[in-house]
Length: 176
Image (cartoon, rainbow, N blue to C red; front, side, top):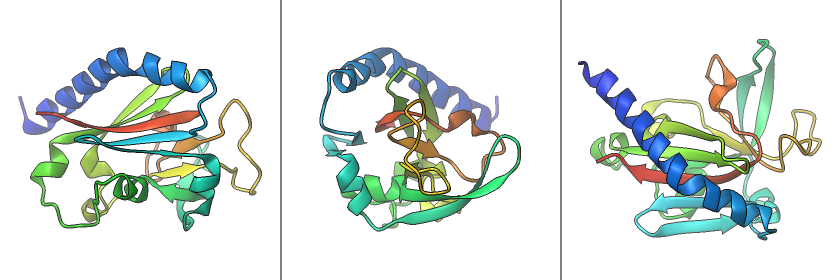
């Protein structure tokens, strides 16, 4: 089995386990009217909760993204790397490969949907466009209720299968 295949299987296994153990608790907390719009867990006890107003106060970032139909648009919001930095995990610092490739990021929706990323896909040192947490459409209007108030947009992906509507949590988990 190749290293790439082992990493793929490990990432999906971690995502499945995390989904089973964590998504219902996250979903219930937000369904019960928590003030937080987004919880960012950087691992090792480092976590931060953000209201929509606090997210809007951060310096805006943008990246070109494509819809499933191929139309491009400018996604605007705040990058996942920025949110992780505020929560105590600075991917902008040169951490080296081991602490990054040995971890996964799980993005969770209020309904329990979860998408898993290798943390290297989020780390700016690996050359990927920034994954963005957004709260507006490309024309500046608030996201519709079935998509928001927050969504995760991942520019550079040919299919938006890991884009997460109604985003409520970002969690870093160790794969070791």
